[in-house]
Image (cartoon, rainbow, N blue to C red; front, side, top):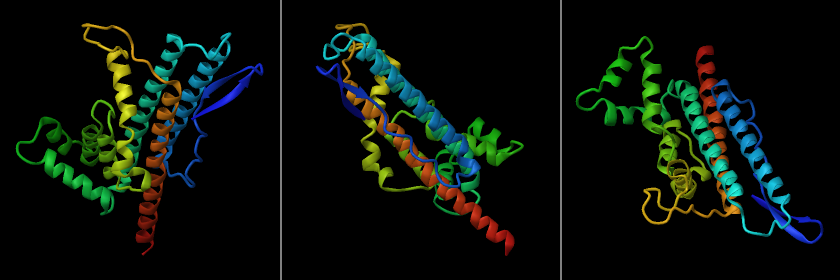
Length: 253
């Protein structure tokens, strides 16, 4: 998100900003609280980074001039903060919510079963799988394995988002494959910054210049990427509450 504001009545500086923090899901269950807290903390951290970027640019004599490498590094830092927050938020959501979601038959349990039959229980069992099966709490250990399989070292693309969506058994217009695919440009930027320092040729051959980045585009990428995380949190909170209500009715029956 970006807005143009006047400066000294003679020029305009395009501010890079996030859209407002969404409202916390009503009656947010304990299984979603930690993920929500990480989402909120990420939103606040990235918003402060953009505030610092805007203030630094506004302090220049001519904010319409070329964007300095310092300001580009601040934008790159926002990409890294956003990606780290998404990773922490989604991993936490999976770890905290799956125990409840898998307690009943449904889309989440179906995805869990398919994954293990296809990737973990077919053929010779790996040592991590064997250890999970004989753990003091096998269910928790299997969920930990599941989360690792879904997210890998970190969430780095839209296909991982889609797998996590299916694992949680949630859906919605913001979570279709076509919409999730539109976030791949953010993950590509994250890879370029984290693994290549945004160098045009990180191998050392040819040009050693760094990729130019449009500040407005970076702001929009980060804003959209953060809000897709909310699109995971809100329906997961709803799904968890539905399972808990169902379990309550069963106990009363």
